[in-house]
Length: 224
Image 1 (tube, rainbow, N blue to C red):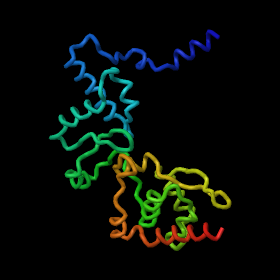
Image 2 (image 1 turned 90 degrees about the vertical axis):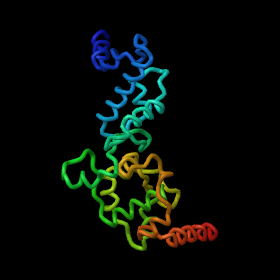
Image 3 (image 1 turned 45 degrees about the horizontal axis):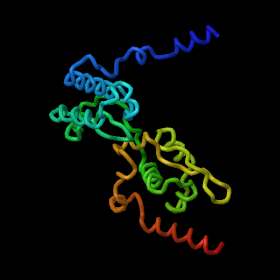
Image 4 (image 1 turned 120 degrees about the horizontal axis):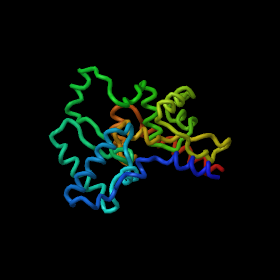
């Protein structure tokens, strides 16, 4: 039993034990400044968007994360990067005005989105709007088979996960987008997806195909 207790103590992160979150010995202005620096350091070091719960581990209970982020963004207003809300958290992102300079430098960037073929991009867009959706339903919408390889490629890139089983015969798997999908495409939630009209203009989705599938499903239900 003694050995087990010692193992638990050893496994506990020492930084968590020693970090003074409340900073009650500091004047209010210095306390706020230290919280700002901690939060910025965590966001800067993280490879994925940082959630409110994670940031709350390094600041006091009286700290408003939103107000603190607002102050950080105010300080960064003249910098080529910002702190943005994405995928349910916050992340450092370079400003779009400097995208051409970054591309011209050919410097490796942190966590680039996996390159997608035109077909993969179209399938991913359809899943984003129709989720949860089966591979068979996608094939009907596109008028051709959506291959397992395409789905596997999108899963390997971290864009797709498994949704609930479909209630249709055979209970096939459905697919949904992931938090990484939101992060990679700069979205805070799925509500920020562009309007269908924009995708129609780009030739990625067809409103007629979507409405046709819905009508076919309704007719099938009426026949049953």
